[in-house]
Image 1 (tube, rainbow, N blue to C red):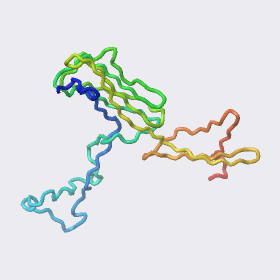
Image 2 (cartoon, rainbow, N blue to C red):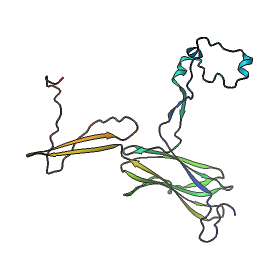
Image 3 (tube, one colour):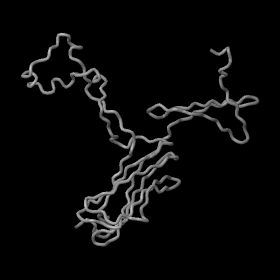
Image 4 (cartoon, rainbow, N blue to C red):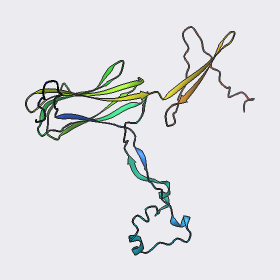
Length: 241
């Protein structure tokens, strides 16, 4: 059965196209393992053997340093992320999307759409329906990037779909779904104390990520029926060290 033809009733059709998606995020620094060192630092009596001795012991000097900078274990290489990782509220979701023709024939009139779906709404990130690709040859691909600021917590679905005309002049529709979860970077814990004429509220903000966060401002906004007075330390008070 050739790609692009339909299977028996009730079965899924075979498609010529397929999507590949990779999240675009900062690469990490490659750490060399094991760490290198000067042999004489461990054994002052150490002496380099001759070439014949070294040839009989493979990788004998793989941990030997040739320069002091190698002691850091950090080379000049960067490593791309090997998994989707964790993404937090407020970050920009950036993704590299590739739609490829994995058949042995060309397809035509290729319309591509990428949407980000949440529990509340669906946002179009890319749509070339107004000017579809005239032809996508065999083993060819079309690449593009999308970006969107994340403003909701919870499940998100990147919906990539394409409508195209196969070699047998059959119009086909292919959707693919890529799911991920947006986490909250901060956790807020509160304590309330009710007094005679006022209520004291203590708030604790906890960083739930694996890295440091910079808070430019923190503000408490009370309900319309209340007024809030922040209890702050007076830096100009001479009694405060």
